[in-house]
Structure formats: C-alpha cells, structure tokens
View (cartoon, rainbow, N blue to C red):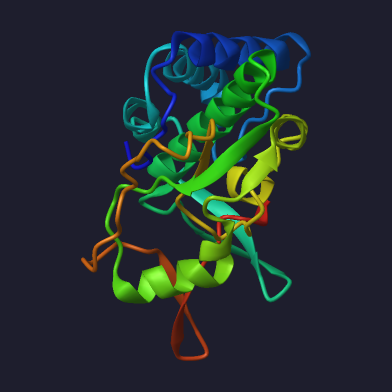
Length: 221
C-alpha cells in the first residue's frame, strides 16, 4: 500500500467500512468515478467491496488495471474540454482514493462508537517522493495540519458526501499523503513514514512551454 493506514487491520474498523459501503449501495448513492467503464460497473462494485472488506488499494488497483477503466477521458483545461488517454496511474490513484475514503469513514464511525470525538491527522505516505514533489505537496498539504485534530463527526459527514479524502482532512484536492488515526497518548511514540528524496512519477502536461501537474479534479463524464 502507498498509505500506512494505522487502523486498517482493526476488525471493528473493517466492519464499519463495510457497513458504510453497504449503506451507500442500499441508498443508491455509491460514488463511481467517471473513469470506470459503464460496461464494468458490477465488476467495479464487487472489486471495491472486496477491497473494503478484506483487501487493500494495491489489489484493487490491479483489478482496475485489467480493463475496468475507460481508455480515454475528458478533462477541463483553462475552462475548455480536452480529451486525453487515460493516465497510466489512474488505477492506482482511483484505488487509493476510494479505499482511503472508506477507511476514514469506518475509522470515524469506530471513533465515535468508542467515545473518541477527535481524530489526529498524520503523514501516512509510504512511497518516497522527490524534493520538488515534496515542496509542492507542502504548499497544498502544509505541515501545520500534521498532528492537529479533526472532529470525527465532521470528517464522517464530509466523506459521506463524496468529498475527496484530502479535502475532508483540510488540505486541497491536489494534496497527497495525509490520513487520520485515533490520537496516540503523549507517552507513546509512533513511527511516521519519512519521505526520502528519490524520484517519483507525477503525471504532467506541458502548458505554455512548462510542465505542470494535472490534478484529477474536473473530469467530465
């Protein structure tokens, strides 16, 4: 996994994740990315359920990469629709976001059930990034958010309205690597993944002669 999710293997959190997914399905409000092929919707839902119940984003991404996504997509650039091939990292990005959203929802439900009204934000990114990417991430996911607390109820409500995980945590849609956990007592030390200055693969387009990162937002179905 690209994110070190502190409570993913907690059976109570997994059950809450599954309950949240089932509630979306029963209420016919399950968010399905426009990147998913309309011919593979049932397979997508089944793969997501497996990931939520017992799997992780890597296994889910592998299934998405096996022909479950469209081959092209339309985005907006400078206010205009532009068609492009589906990005190579689309399966990984989609899998990570959806598993993370249901993880945070399940964690928030579990926290509220155990009288933990607040959750602690932390850096959960495992995959190393370059110095330039780290600087860009700091602009949209400032270190000031790390170790701050967020109300579990607010986080849960935001995510139930399909808010992107990073936005629900207080960052921007382009942010990466933040998650939440049940606050750790002050006398207990916890190892947090440290980003190292190795090369990362960030999708970029060339605009006016300069390479600029393209956010996943504003996909036109």
